[in-house]
Image (cartoon, rainbow, N blue to C red; front, side, top):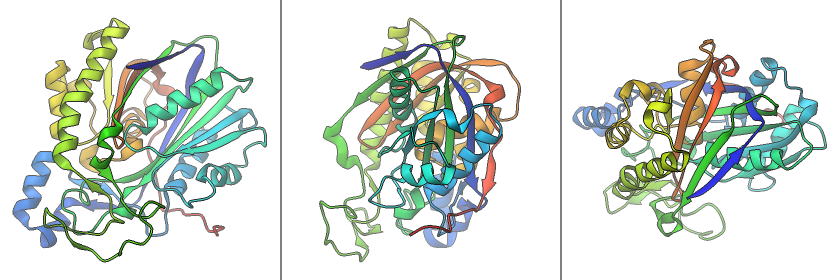
Length: 357
């Protein structure tokens, strides 16, 4: 387990934007059959998903979250020395979408920007990266944006994914301060299983594959331009590797589940959350859930849970355990103290960037 620890940096603001459209899982009954829908809801816990408009991108949602967080924070844009955008659905192949966001947000020229291609572990990987940069620079503050519009690469025929994944964006402000609790993070990677969650075509490895959707071995119509997940591989990883990382991290930190107010976990599905609760003996009331109404929101899962459950509430400081896991395969966890006063309520938006190429 690779670990990182950071002193004197705090989360100074957190906002999350979701599309106005919510698609109820029941609306897929005509496509997949009522019996399959009931089984899906029972297994995953998902009742509806947030769904981006056709022209609405991940950066549009991240941008709206960033505008909101600046409006409600004392951090000035002038002080932002780093902008990282975590996404698997960029606006363009070139340049990084972080530069588009830099322009739209009117951030200073003395600002380092780039994208991170990560999904469900992306928020924590992004934290490690941006905290490291901030900790080793003269910059006073940094901005971490996550965003994904998973629907863009899902086959409408894929009953395993199209009802599971939602769309959203988040913005987290990090600020140097003398008076705050440290942030501790832990990571593992298993590139041997990179095919477990993959969109095979659309970049430069498989440039000329057909776009027609055909029946795969599981009977689902897909093309290689659609994201494919090996469900059993990912499930096994989620209930073995992930709880082991969490246990190892708590051993490293010399903590127990009783030391944390809440466990903010990637919202993979309800069954996996229950397995993590059981294996680590975490009381279910310490695991807030947002997937029932918004689905699996990839890199935005952790910020979305925070905004959904604590946004606009002044509950003081919370000692939270965070964990994200998915494509790569990658897994990460950590603990930190966050003041709920800096967590803003969820905002809904259909806004999209009109001055695009």
